[in-house]
Length: 637
Image (cartoon, rainbow, N blue to C red; front, side, top):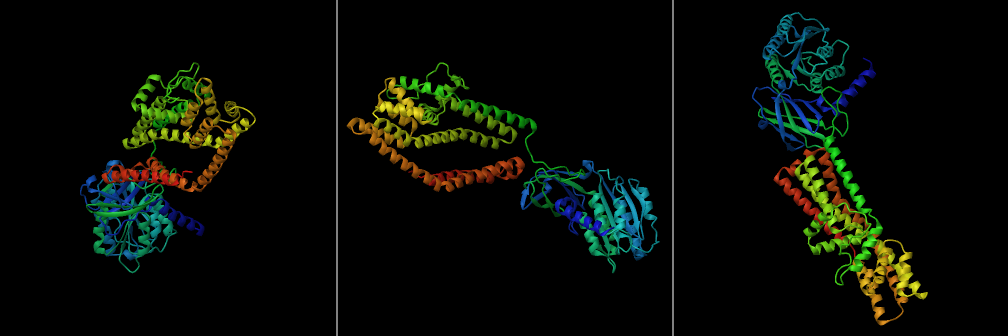
């Protein structure tokens, strides 16, 4: 083998041991329990192949799995042979001159004991090596042929020890298309002295064949302990350094490990791409291993039992239902929010005209001919309005009017109820009831948050226009216009949303409403403190007399300075407001992500009483912290 090929082979072995640890599992020497393999093809579902030297029955209650220091729930324990995966082995015996006499006789007797210990249905092959490997019996269930091959070894030995070539030849004896678990049991008392193979090529050949190499080193001056140990560890086998008297018991122990194998199934709590340190505790002992959880979308196998790992996501049908419902909900919300502005103006004008003297102008439902039909039937809207009470209905209607939304309180509540039912029910069906409750709560809060945000933004735009509006009114009055004429001129020149509000004042006055009442209704609709001061100044001037244009200019300058100061405060508090949002949203986003990619990772917080208490406490503290931070950054100017 060329130096370049050896270097490439070494690199592949190292990469396989790091990236695919299930191909290089290590078992501790002298233990009764060992982990033979780790299958993460269905991650977070993990399957561990565990072997024991004893034949004691093994159930779920007898197994404890600790992952990264956290106990995980075992979902099943099944014998390996019940899963349709047979176990095969090749006995590799050193027949070089160093084994002449008693060592070779003992090895033959131990091999015979091994053949008697394993079931007759277990495929076994026999290979000897000295100056070259020789296959005495192929891997098959013909037990008589295997016994005859072992007995034919006799006492003849030859010079040379092709240790590495023997491992390569033994790995080639297995059927590459079969699903059996392959094992190589090698006994020797020397080191490699002949042949063309090397340690890296031997380990790579065993790895490619999916074979675990059990190496047995008979104590002697020429035994290569380091090479035998490395070969076993790199292929997931074990190394035993023994004397001749212990050889039979070692063979018997290996036979027991091959016979008594179980597959332990559990759900991992580790996130995708994380390093996992695993300990399996059984009545016969414990064993540990480590592996790397597959990354999202990363192909972690080549078709030999390890498939591509994919995150746990809803089924395609569920995804289609969710997408369809989301599209319908978004379309309906857009249709409601983009309702014709003309309809809103006509309704506002008629409401103000038929409004009782002591009631809010927007609280009287009026049907407008030619207006767009709503998506919520009137009967359902009226039921929703009666369910919240008159006082809350009035406050909600006022908030909707402040946001500029042309829907009633009943329609808004009905849409919110449908959103809660759809989101909560879908999440509960696709995921679990607790997720459905959380989704329903978020769907119930979200419409009111959006409404509050829309009302605040509209109020901010009106306040930003107020100073310029007052300057337009003052300029028109200095030119000789009356207050109503100046107000009409301002309503035509300024932009929305202030134009529609001042235009509604003019419409109410023209329909017979007192100017002071119309201005008070404007303050109540908009909810601006600056506008309230302006209306108060106008009413006082109308009662005591004076130069209204000069008063409006003074008020406009004061409002402009307050707006400048308000913007400066907003800039200075931007970092605090951003931190408030990030600290509140980040845990929710991370938890939602984990629910999609690894639902079982958060199971300890939902399936245990301490976890539920911790989750509830964390949620309460988040809400308190958000309210506290919002109070700190909300500076009144």
